[in-house]
Amino acid sequence: MSDVNKTIQKWHASFKKGTDFDSWGQLVEAIDEYQILARQLQKEVQSTNSSDFTEEQKKTLAKIATCLEMRSASLQCTQSKEEFNLEDLKKLETIIRNVLTYNKEFPFDVQPVPLRKIFAPGEEENLELEEEEDATAGAGSTEAFPPRAPAMQGTLLPRLPSEPGMTLLTIRIEKIGLKDAGQCIDPYMTISVKDVNGVDLNPVQDTPVATRKEDTYIHFSVDVEIQRHVEKLPKGAAIFFEFKHYKPKKRFTSTKCFAFMEMDEIKPGPIVIELYKKPTDFKRKKLQLLTKKPLYLHLHQTLHKDS
Image (cartoon, rainbow, N blue to C red; front, side, top):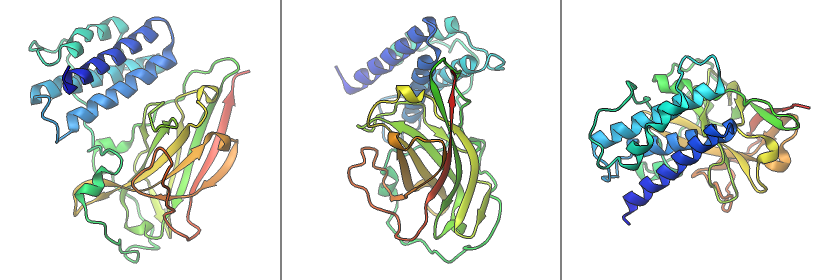
């Protein structure tokens, strides 16, 4: 079996797993599966190195991703305007399984979600020369960051439905300290939850572009709802925060640094965590501090338990 057929088989298995969870009423698990699959499809659509799919096939994959996100939104909010039922979604199973030969009109009038370029961890390193960024320009200034595109409004998700005896975690990203905070254009955070092998456990979320920078800080002041009950997070898992910003000379969004929080650090109240040099090391094997200066990521945790 070719690599592309293995990929399609994997997508189909993920799709079937999600719709099974959905039909069994396991909505949290269904949302997880739908959103992880949607992101995988979106990454394939945006890949410039892959010749496995034609442009038309990529359009089909992008529309399937949109439908998955619409179904996910319907499950998370009964008031959702993007009502998309399970029976409609199941009509896409044949399409995703036979995407290489599918040549009919897509059954739903949906448009692919516009996305910024997504890079795999460290991929942007291949596109730029490592260079010392000027730490003086813009330092100490205070100004707003106008979003570059609608996608920069973020992809944060609402809090999951509560379950008796289970705990949900809200993390408020207060601010990040950087020596060249004034230089960063369109800064935002990507939040992911990974297992000990660096595999996604939850849908990945992006904050909106930060609204304020001041001295050596970029202020976010935004709540992130972790999309899994704390009790269901496996041993060795970690929550990652990747700080990203736009580089106009290179014309792409780059990861500048990252931080992470391990399971034993999940406690209500404020927490300050260290920043590490890119590329993001999801397996936490080779970590290098970004700076020796007292500059950190400032968070505040709130635990919600339904007794």
